Figure 1 (spheres, rainbow, N blue to C red):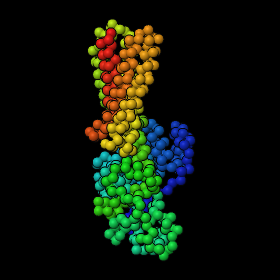
Figure 2 (cartoon, helix red, strand yellow):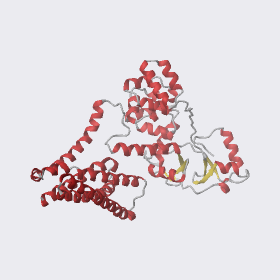
Figure 3 (cartoon, rainbow, N blue to C red):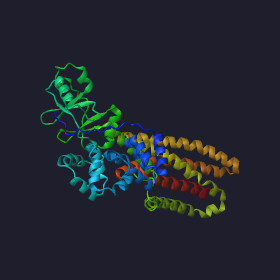
Length: 457
């Protein structure tokens, strides 16, 4: 039996959300004693939320009052930009002290977010054993099972009795957080199965571990992507799961708290990426820094808008003859953009869940095209009737209706095809899919509407 690491930090969650508002108000009044009393009752996650909600000057005042013993935990609760701003004024000995209470997986995430020079200095200031454990976790990609895993495992051998295991656990007097099962290995550390605590407590004490263990849970290879790990935890309602190396040796475990972080980060990434923003960005980052980051995305959107304007300019003669076309032409790209966004969102979600394969891609394509065609016909009829009744122009109403059908079908196709193409090219569909889709629906919608008008009018 062994225990490579056993570090547990418990902090009661005694503060409510309202206390963060109270804290902000107290900081504004400049009462350090009152601030200290409030943050002593707060969980590190709540302190992290309060730090992110404060402008830089007040944030520094609050950070200076945080207890040194929980500084590491608080740093893990804030976004990367805020963490960087807090760490830049800390000495190396302060950083080492702040990380002493962190689990190895959290420590690895923390170290990897630091500048390279600080990382080297921090590693140099750590003990040999701690550094070896940290380097083991950091040897795996951050978004893999190995990068998520804890080393605080409790392992038992299959040739001992359950009474022996219970005596060992009582001797330890403590267990790592989120321990719902023990891991069974042979003398060489090869993974053999799991021993759920409920079986340990409900079976006869003279029964062998090997007769009681379960082998239903397949261990994660250390290189398994983090999103697959999260999906398995969701599908099988896991609290913890074993991680093995390429030889099948148990090297750690993934726990539910780390998986929740993965799920949250993926959700934030999807939402923020659609606007070209970094989910780890500081809400109160300096104006120039934020301006520079957003300028690139605005430039990309400007190029797509200029492309649409160029398309319109090719039909200026038609627009001069029939002014009504200029009034109505925004309807087609707008409807196509909305319909395409619906398909795009559906497909990006399906990709994240691993639901799209080569076998079902064609069926999904036919489904989306059918939806696009039916919606196109429905709204084409409504819009054509409205144009005829409103402006008395049946021909323009017909042109608008046909353009709607064509653009909604195009939007359905593009909403499905673009994410798959981007995934093959290694581009995040959540980041670039919206801009590419808008470009396609704008150009196709305008060309169809104005092209038909030029031909028929």
